Length: 333
Image (cartoon, helix red, strand yellow):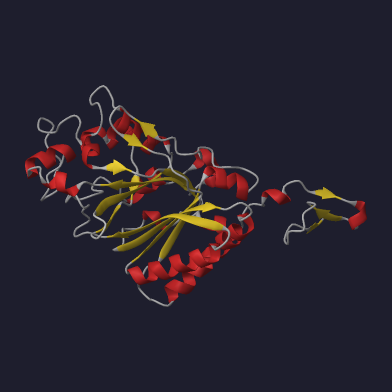
C-alpha cells in the first residue's frame, strides 16, 4: 500500500485551499509542477522549522485524462451536483486541488505563491480560500466541527483506498464545497433552536438524545454509523469587510460514494427528512471532486498522453519515439 498524503494528520491552525483549472496547452507545465511539488514543499518548510507545512495535492477526472495515460482511479468522476426542491449543491470547475496547511499562515502563503507563479500562463486559480482554526475546532456557527471523525486505524480505513483498487492503494477521493452562512439569521435563533438544527449541544458538544434530536438535524441526516465514515478537514473562512462567513467543507474518503450519499440525503432528502435543516443556514456555492494520489505518485508520474502511442522506426536506428518532440518521450529499445 502506498503512503497516503498527510490528510490524516491533525488539523493545523492555518490552511490555504487552491482550486485550479488547466488552460489549453498548459498540461506540460502542470506536469512539471506536480513532479517538483515534493521538493518545493520541503524547500519552503525547511525555512520554518516546526511549521509542519504540508501540501495535499489532488487531481480531477478530466484533468487526469489530459495529464496521464494508463490506469485511472476506479471511482474518479466529475462532481455530479445535487438539486433538491429547496436547496442546491452546484458542481463547479476544478482540475487540481492544493490543500496547503501549516502551523502558521506565512508558510502556507509562501508555498501558495510559489505554486501560483509556476502555473502562470498554464493554469487559472478559480478559487482561493484562506482557512483558519476558530477557537476549539468550531465553525462560524459556533459549533465544534468534525467530532465524529474516525481516529487511528479507523481513519486509515475510512480515508484511504485498499486492495479494491490496488494500483492506487493509499490514495483517497476528496470532495470540496464552500458553504456561506447568513450569520444574522443564525444568531436570531436561540441556542436551543440552533442545537436542534445541528443535533448536538453547543457548549460541550454532546450529541442530543434520540428523543430530542430532530430527524432533519445535521447529525441525524449524516449518521455515519449508517452511511459510512469520512475524514473531514473542514475549516472556517470569512471576510468582515464583505460580510462573508463560511465553512470550507473538505471530505476525504476511500470511496466517493460515501460523502456523495451524505450529500444526496442532505439536499435531496430521505424517507425521514425532506432535507438537512442546516442548509437553511448554509448555502453551497462550489462543489468539486478529485483523486488524492499516494505520496510516491509524484516521484514517477505516469506517461503523458503524447507519449502513449510509441513506435519503433528503422529510420531512427532502433529509437522508440512517440512522434512528439517533447523532451523525455524518447527511450532506447
